[in-house]
Image (cartoon, rainbow, N blue to C red; front, side):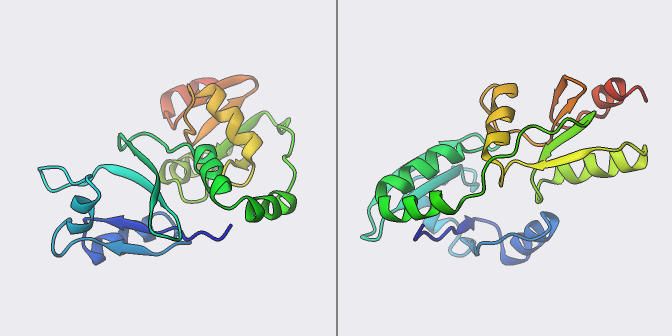
Length: 188
């Protein structure tokens, strides 16, 4: 796709740098809307009166026309499939080329413990450390790269792409909850 992802926040540059580092790095530019505080967020109608910004996604076409807006709660994951659908509508030729080069979805692993996650998710990092600390063997599935796996997670998590999500011998645990995880693993 001929698209550029940008992250923008009303936080300062040092704060954004620390946030990106806490995620293990990100692959797109981050912009600071710190001074004058929130001017861009205000122009797009997502600056709260308390000076914070709503979590919002915008798709803007090459002519500068806003084609898609999604404003949602900070705890909600955006629907990536919807974003891909809108982008494909804007550039059908590029979407066809991209679709032809995508790896095929892998079947669900048959391991006793499967963790559905993303590389940058802080809760996923805590879950990895927890499993390693307890000597638990597990298989990791990156839902960002395996969209069929992401669809499975959304089915288990009421439509949300919540990471980490675990499948422990058929018991599904959505989110990193050490008590539930320990109980399912028999280490509580």
